[in-house]
Figure 1 (cartoon, one colour):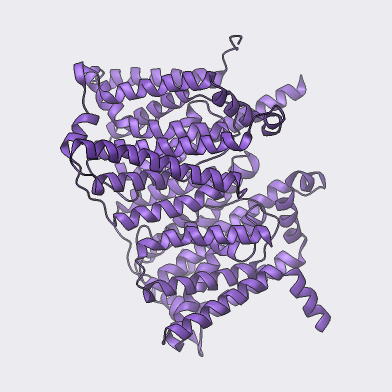
Figure 2 (cartoon, chains in turn red, blue):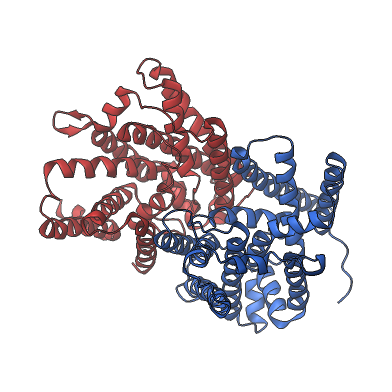
Amino acid sequence: MNGILRAFARSNKSILLSYACALLIFVVITLITPGFASGRHIRILLIDASILGLIAMGQTLVIITGGIDVSIPWTVNSAATFLTLLTAGHDHGLGTVIPLLLAGTTFIGLLNGLGIAYLDIPPIIMTLGMNSVLLGGLLGVTGGRPGGQAPPAIQWMANGNVGFIPVIVIFWAIITFLATIVLRKTAFGRQLYFIGSNENVARFSGVDVRSRKLIVYCLSGFTAGVGGILLAGRIGLSYLGMGDPYLFQSVIVVVLGGASILGGSGQYVGTVAGSFILTIVKGLLPVFNIPTSAQQVIYGVVLFIAVVLTSLL
Amino acid sequence: MRAAKLQPSTVIPYVILLALIVSTALLQPNTVSLDWLGIKTNAILPLALATAGQTLVLLTGGIDLSIGGVISLTNSLEATRMSSSVEGMVAFTLGMLALGALLGALNGILIVRVRLQPFIATLITWSIYGGLALWILPTDRGNVPQAFINVLLAHPGGIPVSLVLLVALGLFWLYLKRSPLGKAILSLGSNAKSAWLSGINVDRVRLAVYSLSGCFAAAAGIYRTAQVASGSPTAGNNFILLSVSAAVIGGTSLAGGKGSLIGSIIGVCVLKMIGDLLVFSGVSSYWAALFQGLLLIVIIAAVSVGEIVRRRREGLL
């Protein structure tokens, strides 16, 4: 048992470091600011980290293959807006609306994947264009008006409890488990790392690089859709621009979790740690009276530090 | 140099622009005039400047996402911090150009020294520069001296200042193309390794290109301030996508090594005319972003398909 643990520690140095970082930041902040570690506040932090982590799940897979998805913000926004528009704040019809929304966001990912994998369009360009298409589409459809209320059932999924544990945290734990199994134990998972470390070698070794990339971008659209629905539930409504923070945040948490931005490495459990770190840091800003406008500067600096650190480790 | 065979990608933008001008003249008679030209050159100059910088970066095989932040930042600063005395305005504007070059040089350092990929280095600085813009100016507003606007939007003798600047941009390219730096940029983009082997200081060229891009982005931010008579902390974000689109329409390759700044200016004109035609046909401006994104994807896809077809044909021959 001890040997297994030591082997795990050796092969996951950067991930363990991420968790140590999260814990350290949390302890330090708790000592400085009373009330930060109150049960209520921890619960809020956990819920926010869950939504961020779920949105960044697809981004993790995309970055492992050496790509990037910057269409996540308006994919999230599309799911949230259409949830509130199609349900008009009621629970009935959710059984058809949710599959429809997830199919829609997966289709967005499919289009990204087709352009990137089959037409060799650089990921940053393809997804930047897609983000603009979705932004314009949503503005056009809504006429610039904010959407309505999120259905109560979705609000419960994002804010409610089972026993004393938030529903969304249980959901996130299950997803984390599944993602870890897929990445570590399946051929598909190993192929993603292979593609990310050297695409040409992967291709010549018989990996179907194109179909793998296609699936990865579809998954990114899917998880952005899941995150968008839950975000609408968390806030209780939808508005235009609600996904924008996730452009930088989804990349930051993946890199904070020890993944190389060049592809070929990274674990979803690392992204989970990254989500904790970023959520705690975000919770810290109001404590030190840092204006929200400065958040973006901090994101840039954190991303820089994370990219440099992961390239050194 | 020998006159190279005309590539379709260098001719196509001119043909499209001509077709758009003709169709505009037919759809809206009596609009195409010198006044019209002045209004159009005023409108396209910020994007033309931003695209000029982006083109230089694309020629080296990189990309500059941070121009979004640089334009927002210089626009916000010009609209809120500039004094209204003549010396003050001149000094402040020159300072903004220097700031742009400095912010661009920082990108260059991240890429050359820290060895970050261009897209991640400029994603980081886009976030930081854009955040600084939001810090300086949380919402759209500003107080721009009237004299500043009058000078930049002037048209002495009927010729708009913006047209003069646009022509100057074209001449700058003709000079740059023949200069050692220009040749180094083009050879770096076609093959970085052989450029390095032939004794080009690759790092210094990259640094110069990103500094120039920052400086051009600052110029775009400055001109936008006069054009809109206001500042916006998010004004620049739209320029990222449009500058890449315009450069690609103008025949610049995303892989580097191929393209021209004059082609990019034509690309900007094409984008502007398409936008005008959409407005003329009654499409709500809410949909603008959708068409801009779609256009980028379609053009790049077309270029890619053309490339794949060409490679197949060469493989067969």
